[in-house]
Length: 172
Image 1: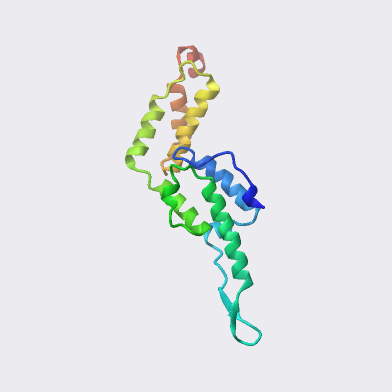
Image 2: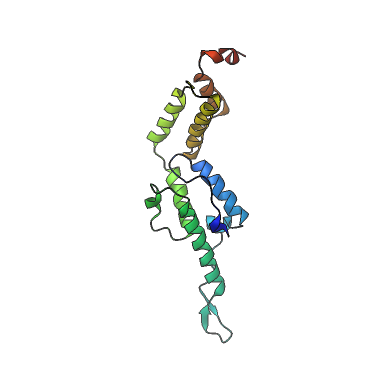
């Protein structure tokens, strides 16, 4: 069952794209993406029985159990610092929509701060792998804010933070 599926990224303010990728792949593997996005709605709670009276709809009960399990699982993948943002979200579609809203309304100040960080990141004493990961994290954070950068800007940021020992590579 998908509720036992662990993802190795807990959503916080810095890793939305990594989290989203893992969540979507897991949800898709269980064919629940349309439930998550709200494209599939709950069936009617009551249906006409054989005698014409209204009875509980078993399909509704199944849907609600599955949706509640998905919503609960989603909430379990969110850091405790962000969970208060999701109070009142009772369906998986509501949780998903709140996540998307939260990360789409990142402030202009946050975007400006990320652009500044990208311009000022330096490799220093860390390995090239760690340095490139830090650059990628900032670029991913910018993308999650709706402010992605071009490949040229990405490469320029990398080159800008390299020390003199890398000058021969930068002049090619």
